[in-house]
Length: 144
Image (tube, rainbow, N blue to C red; front, side):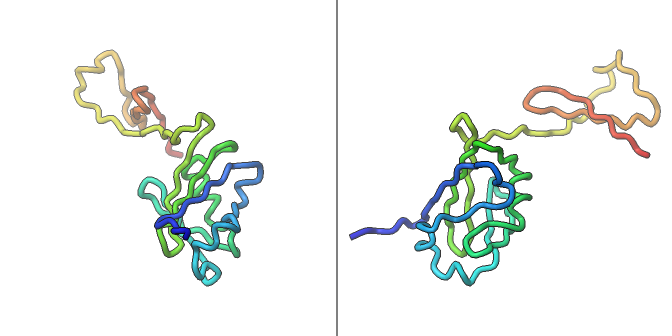
């Protein structure tokens, strides 16, 4: 006797043309009772939900936004875990076969003017400091 998984998974290697959509494998459809009644699926990654239109068993409209938001690249491997009601938790593995790492962006507050005495700030300077994984960058915002 076969016991079905409580939260079934499927994986998709990312191949050329992936930005146009990806198909849920036909063999996986047995876990999606009534899937043909759903018009949309929810793809979730690190707490962020993305509504994606379903065309039969293919993720289409909204898929490109998910790809962009999560920097999905050719050669990545995606694992979709079905949470029920056409909701999927998505894990993204890059070409190193490890979970995709994202650069953290945090704006640095200028703590003390004395720290940057050698840095002269002109009136109306619209630059901001940001830190990406320990590296400091200055971003200039131009108001036209």
